[in-house]
Image (cartoon, rainbow, N blue to C red; front, top):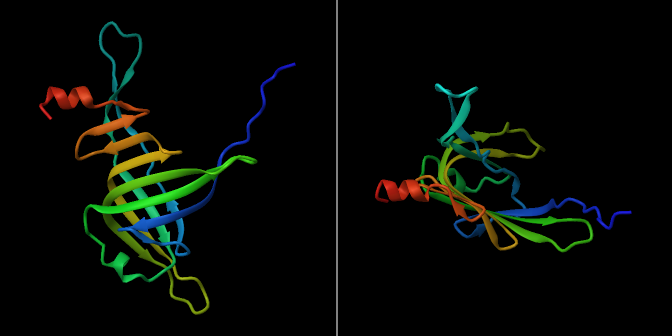
Amino acid sequence: MSNVTAALPRQLKAFNLYYDGNSFAGRCDSITPPTLTLLLEEHRAGGMDGPKKLDMGMEAMTATLVISDYDPRLVSLFGVDNVPLVARGAVQAQGKAAEPVVLNMRGMLTAMELSEWKPGSKSLKTLTYELDYFRYRQADVEYMEIDIINMVRRIGGVDQLASQRTAIGL
């Protein structure tokens, strides 16, 4: 008989959004963090039995927020670059203490979709941000930092682009 105990998964139990230090508790319905995707190019040359995909950088990072508030501070950010956003979540496994997850994001609000105006129904805004910065921390440990402008891609504590920055003098 095995002594391995099955663990239940951590689940997001609660979250909050902050813009410029202002809390949007009770007004942010959902946050969709960016999908992180490497841009790969297929390479096959003589002496190879098949293709190998090469890392050619990253695809664009996009985050989406759904807000149920007509806060003019958000509307006035349309087209403004370097908007800092912080999403704080609490993930918890059954019977365990909650762990903080913090997503730091920075980018430009490039799309704003206003919901239908209808009496007696919730009024939502869907905000789309094109990001140039994303950082993921859980339980006070940084697992990922991607800074497009400064050519940083640190995953699990390893900066995957350090030698490239050195090679080009950055």
